[in-house]
Image 1 (cartoon, rainbow, N blue to C red):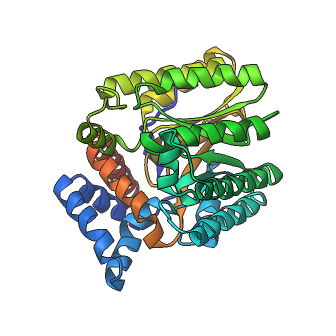
Image 2 (tube, rainbow, N blue to C red; image 1 turned 120 degrees about the vertical axis):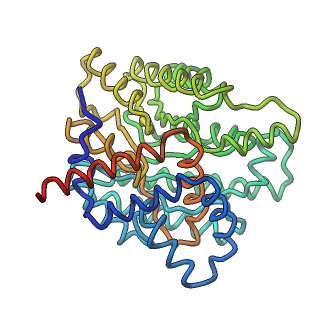
Length: 389
């Protein structure tokens, strides 16, 4: 059995200084008050140079690969020395102008072309809100009739997505379409399915994301697998627990509709593991990207693979954790010859702030996450100190 307590493997790539800095950062994030204050002040003070430098040298450095693709590749190359691949995410989202959307598309394509030259960068992640206006997605989600101007706007956005997926197919780099909030998710799902039908004939070029903290996603995943079988394409399924829980519940309560979120964590964990099993039982028509920081789910996946005689390095199965988190899972799985890649955002500090604030809040709100990270780091620091004696 894989030992996720092996901190020597987990942190071999980290220097003593980096571990001590990470220890300090996770101690800060363990305090909800400090995290909430930081989340409130950060966007307002980004224009101040020294504030930006503090962010860059702390939370940014922990969770991001660099400010540009060159820096991100340097980080990815370091991970590759320990048999861990990288998923690059140009961390922009929530843009509003056509010029910004086109700029994001070009950056994604540049990233894909670059990734195609590097064996250790196997995926890139995209958010449709990087080149699709939120208001338009929301109107599409509600099934409202679009004006002629909105139809033209939609076509431009779809063509951006098409160009990105075509680049992925050409340069042998898989495209992970990230999940959005429930009130704009339906058009994202529809577009992801269209892209998979077009590009996933023999292998998974395009993946959609299934957030199992939603109570309807397990049934939706099952429906998608059946659709893939009926239409002869490979379903690319990135399965995660989810990232918008508090926002979803607040909006449902405010607007008086049933919350799409599971009633409790037990339900989420149950559906996640069932989704994992569902994908691995249908691996003939599914490629699964196992995005989890949960050790039990990771071990369950390895057990199912062993029971079904699926090779540890089967290219249809990839384990992934966020860069800067759960290194004990990533690097110990990689040591055991499983396919592992780190989800690594990159980009200017200002552009990745929404992502960084989600990471800080996630570490504060997910029970035990921060303390687990901190315990492992401190265990490794203690081990290294003992080794020096």
